[in-house]
Length: 433
Ligand code: UGA
Image (tube, rainbow, N blue to C red; front, top):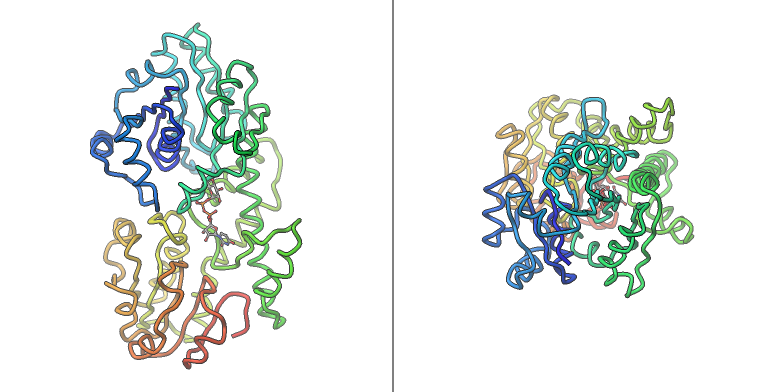
């Protein structure tokens, strides 16, 4: 099948590459000429493990094409995926202007039946809005389908090639058959495809992300309580997660969730509720608890030292989680901001995400060449991202560099006894100090 993808951001690029890998001819459209030229030459514009190989394989197989020309790509395909940004507006609601602009262009340019697939995370009712915009521009037949994406950054290839389920919101049999055909390689191997109406599909995406945000946040509160009563959250987590109604995943406490999805989607669902005079109490609390959780260790560091003025804090990890260069809503940034406000100096190490942080805060902090160099004369170390290279460090080398042997660990990287055996004061999340 020929498929057009509009938008080559994270979701669009991974979706396009995956659909090419499944044997389709995929035409990716983006307005960014430089990016399109780069992709034509085989340059992957995002950092994502294992993506480059699949990307290059499909370019060489002539299944993956790039263009800035929407009309040209539109004419080639019956199915058009929209993978456009839906950034939060000032009030937290999702900004649909990119999606509706392209819907308008499709309405003006199409010359035969099309299936327009909403892949972006969009509020309930967006399929209706896209339908209305296209209808205002053409009398030709078309269908609008909601097909949310559930992949995680850092695991994009793994998740997109092995989805837990495919959700399709669709009220036309014709479009339903086309979508079933596209996802047949998955359904053949037992992946469920769940058809439903468009609104339920749109809400499924927000509900899934918000539920996971609540799950993490619940565990963060349990962790904070563990510290007060002398319980160990790792034990509690294992005890709880062994009940398969709860499950082990997304129960890891830390310094809050970040990224381009959970914070934005929780906000957007709260706002959508408000528009209907509906209060999502659990999500409002989740947001508030998460905001406090992000800086909980900097507050502990301040308590420890009394005054942070002139203190040198080494920071391991800038990305919002491991295996990505994404720093959107990263806890590291909240901690840096607070530490600088309190007069501390920060030296950070994160080779993958450093460039993105430099673009946002420039030289307000120092950047180290390697993880040990960040520790030179440090009063303490704060760990904000669970990069694998931090998992088994040389504690003696660390001790030789640091002014004080103190670690505040926001990602519970080490068994409690290990840093202690090397003489470190070790504070993590939800475990005894
Ligand atoms: C999330 C969802 O997991 C995907 O299913 C969804 O498709 C995606 O959003 C999206 O809407 O596009 P992602 O933002 O890439 O994926 O990252 P996650 O792996 O879900 O992590 C989100 C945040 O939660 C990170 O800050 C991570 O450190 C934190 N987290 C995750 C925890 O603090 N504890 C956990 O146990 C798990």
